[in-house]
Picture 1 (cartoon, rainbow, N blue to C red):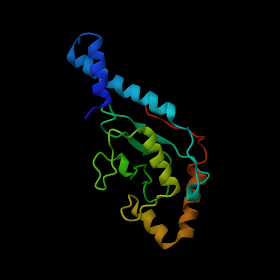
Picture 2 (cartoon, rainbow, N blue to C red):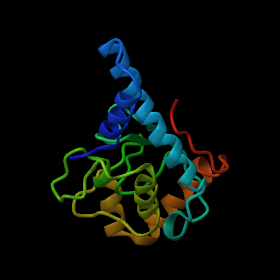
Picture 3 (tube, rainbow, N blue to C red):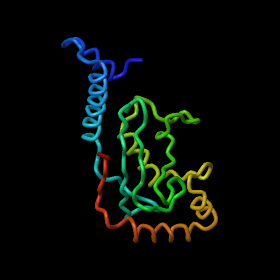
Picture 4 (cartoon, helix red, strand yellow):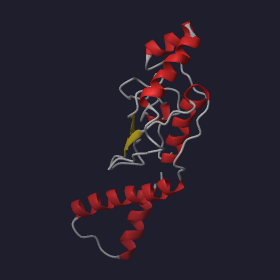
Length: 173
């Protein structure tokens, strides 16, 4: 499989000889990741369109991009307390594309980008409520038992925790 990293290594090899293998591999790996991130972040829109239960809330995420990106997925955590089946109150996120190995075949692949992550997060806030395998079992059960009370609790969380921030996105650092 041809990856961007191998292409850049080949291109760099044509420009001159390699110096210290360990230092150059480490520098090159970070350089490839940084090149990918600059291009991807430039393509992202700052605000997600909100609709449904979470309309009006503004949610902050922390994204950690490992050195081995794009071969492994970024790690994403929701920093805003939220009441929903696919995100715990402590911020862990259940989204198959954030898994390195996913049973359903929709996990991370080197062809995926941060834009895919943003679209996946957007789907969590607009149309994807997972009741088959929820991460927050209590929230999923609450929704199945009493949709109106569930909506009321979501609204309470939004009014307390998700209205202070104004479209902030933290890409790690």
